Amino acid sequence: DSAWIKDVSDLPLADLLKMSDLLISDYSSVPFEFALLDKPILFYTYDMEAYNRTRGLIRHYTEVIPGVPCRDSGMLLDQLKDMNRLQSEVERFS
Image 1: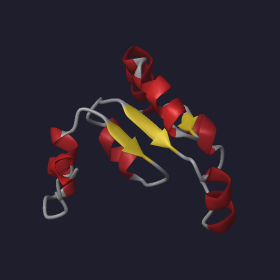
Image 2: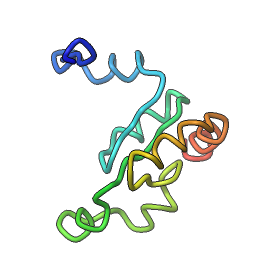
Image 3: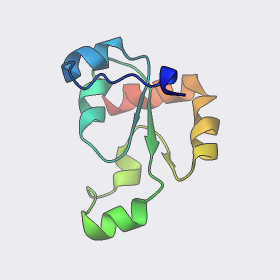
Image 4: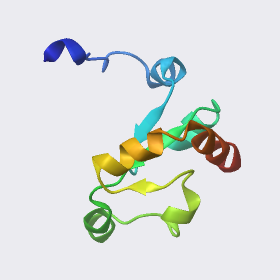
């Protein structure tokens, strides 16, 4: 249903980050900025091996990111259930 989808591509990224309660990202640099807002971050990395082969990841990616790389939507939802842990990971990261 398109009522659930909002096109916000015309808004500045800084505004979107401030309005968001949680970030779900992949391999972008946005988590570095978002972490400064002291808000939780999830990483949806269903294609991590392929991405690493074609584009490359930063060294020790899984140890650096503030959280667990989620390889599927079920794992993503499980991680979402523990907001306290997500918050403490962001505090460590930032």
